[in-house]
Image (cartoon, rainbow, N blue to C red; front, side, top):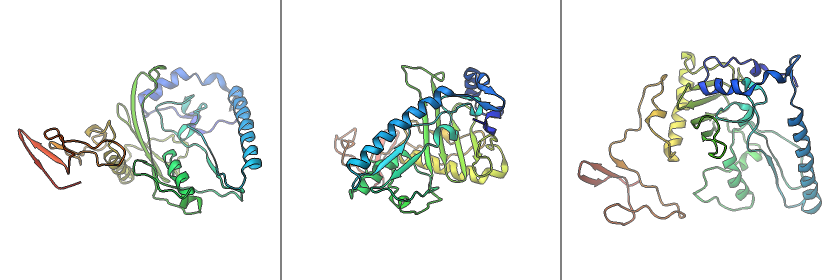
Length: 298
């Protein structure tokens, strides 16, 4: 297949671990006359497509009137883009922008929706299709409105990477990454290396890293704030000031002043209990030296 502009990415100004990965990927042997040959990959795809077709045919024959079909994937493959292969601690479209096709009972004419969604939205969507409410413990949001044609340009998705399986021990160990993407921009925080910002409207191949470009400071900081808010709201276990204090933005909004922020009751996990009394906690507990006091409720 013809190589796209991403294959010519020199990785200048990109995170160091991407450059190390590229040196190990050895993409050049697959290049020939402006194309990349990956016969085993496409052979595998052909086989999987055939097997998926068998499942779809069975649904159409056995339960065509009450079954939704969800077609998606866990990730993509770099396939030579940005001199990389396989998957790993990068947030390029080749491995993060995966297919999502939903067929309702009886099929129908296909339509597309550009709203950014995530895998965590699928279970709430399935529950909504079944007429059931989503429990508060679920992180995602139903995309039933999008299935009905509603576009939501303000919606964003967060993607994360931390540590590849210990059994495989790849990528040199701990590579913490957080990414937020909407319909216009993608911001990637590589905690231990260079961060990335891409204009998805004018640089779909994600070649030009705009993280230090002052013309994009407003868009970058708005996405950064949304990512930090998400990490705070979801209690990201690796949350900390270092995600906020970056070389391109030395700020601090979330000040730690001795406060304990007990997890709100969700009806599933055991209640959080006070260290001193053993009773369920209420509100946010503040500690200054040896004195403790309760502040306003959560």
